[in-house]
Length: 291
Ligand code: ADP
Image (cartoon, rainbow, N blue to C red; front, side):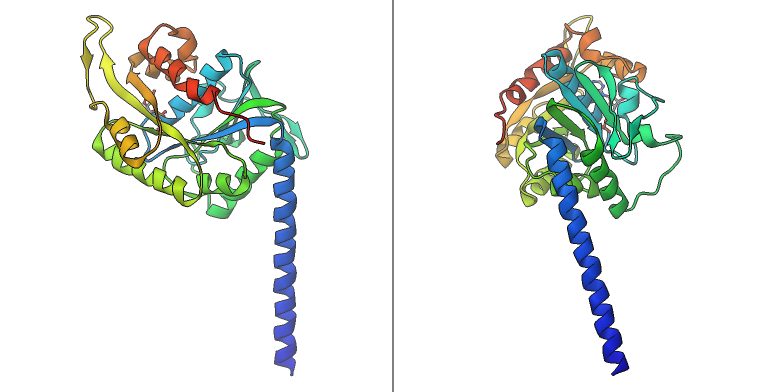
């Protein structure tokens, strides 16, 4: 009898705990939906593996859209290696905010940035993030960052198909879709297929594939060299039945601009790669608002 009572008590506690969790999940979702009601389009940038230029592409897409007159928020959820503060020249910026509201950092009037990196005292310190902790941080970012009205929110996710993109998909019901970045060589392309399968599994629309580091045009003689080959991303996109958004060539000035935290598309506006970024945003600018 005592045992039965204990079991009933345990069951009751478990149900109560579950009820509270569900209640909280509902309130959070509601709060996120309210915050996001001011954001017309939400995009997530993914890649199959690291080093293909995903963050560089995310920054330059955000900058290109903001140059085209759109108000853009750039959110970096790469908890293991947040590179957006460095790429945007906003390292060591202190975060401000009140209870339940965090202010993004202004890169310009039209480009607002939020990164996990702003929350770390020393970005070189290793941080051990388990799945649930990542989920609650991403939930806090989506719920509490005070973006104000935005045309685009671009989310830079870590490489692969781990907890971070999954958390975003679970928390944002009306995300427009994913932009998948790859380099042209087979090794990278094999990994990107996994990203595309992930999107399909979680019902995340795929806006398209961008092939980065696609050929190198010599600034002296104008001759094009296919360092990592070209066309692999487009071929794979075709095979997998997803749109191809375009190619961004290799340009040493991209590295230079990234290292200095200056805007590549502004400082090298006439370069092939800057032109390519401007072209890649065209289909993104044509996205219809989801109601
Ligand atoms: P990821 O986010 O995929 O790990 P990053 O954006 O950090 O990759 O880029 C990795 C490196 O490649 C950086 O040094 C960056 O400056 C460089 N890079 C990215 N795209 C290009 C490009 N189109 N041309 C030259 N260098 C590039």
